Length: 158
Ligand code: AMP
Image 1 (cartoon, rainbow, N blue to C red):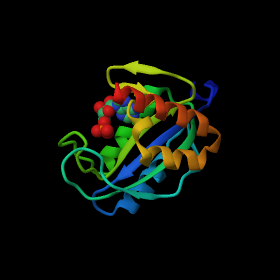
Image 2 (cartoon, rainbow, N blue to C red):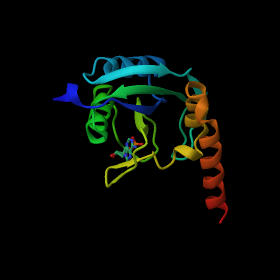
Image 3 (cartoon, rainbow, N blue to C red):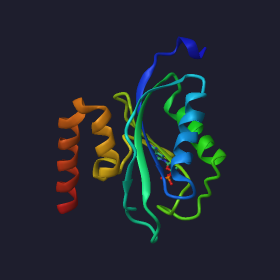
C-alpha cells in the first residue's frame, strides 16, 4: 500500500554526454515525473562540465533534482535504471560516456550500504558537478557540503 508510506526527500544527480544531451535529461525528468510515488520538487540549472576520470570523452551536462518519493531506496534504484535503459544507455566501461546517468545522492537521512547501492553516493562529496547544482537548490546544505568536502580532501591527502 504505497499511499501509506511516508514520503522521503531524495536528491538525484543527472548527467549526459552522448547524443542530444539536453533532450536526454528532459526526457529522463519526464519519465521520473510520470512514475507513481515520485514528485519532482526542485530542479537545478543545467551546467556543462568536463568529464572526470574514464576514457577521453566529450563534456557533460549535469543537473541535480530534488524529489519526494514513497519508493524505497532499492525501488528507486530500479526506477532510475529502468529510465536509463529506456533512454538507450549501454554499459560498456566504468566512467565511460553515457546518454543518461541517474545517481541517488541522498535519501533523507538514511545510509544504505548494500552491494548494489551505497547512499550517500560514495563519490558525491568530491564532485563539483554534483555539489554546485545541489547547493543551488538546497542552500541550507552549504555547511554540510563544506564539512564533507574538507573530510574527503583530508582523506585523499593521508
Ligand atoms: P554508474 O555507471 O555510475 O551508473 O553506476 C551504476 C552502478 O552503481 C549500478 O550498478 C548501481 O547498482 C551502483 N550504485 C551504487 N550506489 C548507487 C547510487 N547511490 N545511485 C545509483 N547507482 C548506484
